[in-house]
Length: 223
Image (cartoon, rainbow, N blue to C red; front, side, top):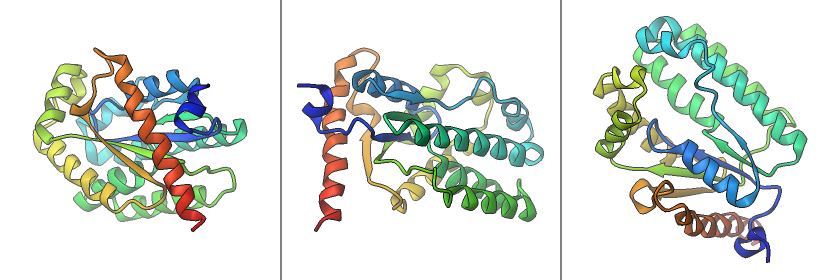
């Protein structure tokens, strides 16, 4: 029996991993993809030309950063469509518009014109035929303190220098966003319920839940 049959996960599934900075999205993405023999769609952080500038001056660079992320994620959406699925995606395009761009607009670090331009571009992208919505969105959740501790351990200087108030606001916005997210089925997993580094096999119960979430949604669609 294949791993896909064991957990009833389609070979053409698109699985997205979401959550705030520091929760371990990349680790989760790679672990699931490795088990399912899926391709990964990773967030391009190290090659982002705006990220360092953004952390030093939110107001000047927020629009540039969000447009860059939007373009990169849309290219990945198109690639997933063209290859017919079988992907695990590190962070979703929905987080960009629902959390980051909105936060900067609310806080005045993105102008009204820039925000309207950004959201209209996002809406145009979502309406295109080659925009596959995920079969399931895995939301990695944890307490604010757990997440701050992980950010400190990870050691990215630009994140460690960011005020704690920023991470607190981000944590709250993520919780509000996921509680109102209805685009696809959501599977919530707490960061304290597994350890993919020390125990790689702890991904197995997660795969079981992924299959149950995908198929539970399909059953509901046929009721």
